[in-house]
Image 1: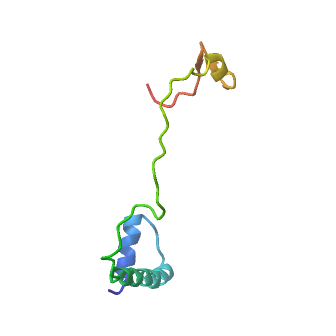
Image 2: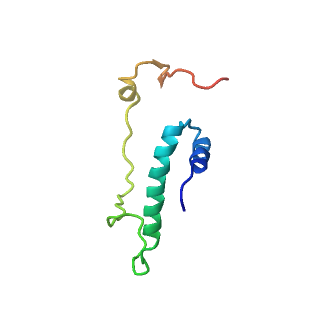
Image 3: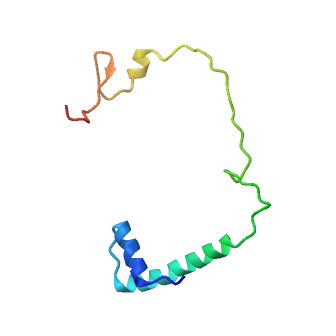
Amino acid sequence: MKVTKEDIANVAVLSRLSVSEAEADKYMGQMDKILTYMDNLSQLDTESVKPTTYALPMQNVFREDVVRESLDREAALANAPLREDGYFKVPKVLEG
C-alpha cells in the first residue's frame, strides 16, 4: 500500500491539523516507511510466543490492612494556605 497525499489530508483532518504541501510530501514518505515496517512485523511468526502484558515479570505485593490512628485535624490543617471552621478552604470550581 502506498501512502497518498489524500491519505495525509484525511489524517490531518481527523487530527485537526493544518498540513502544507511540503509537509504532506515529507509525511507521505514517513508514513509509508512506518506502514512498511508494520507490514514486516505482521509477517513474523509469533505462534510460539506467549502473550504478555508486561515485558518484565510482575507480581502483586499485598500488605495487611491495618487500622491505624489517623492524622489529627490540626496537624492536617497546619500548612493549609486557607482554612475555615476546621476545614480546608479552596476556590470555587463549579458554578452553583
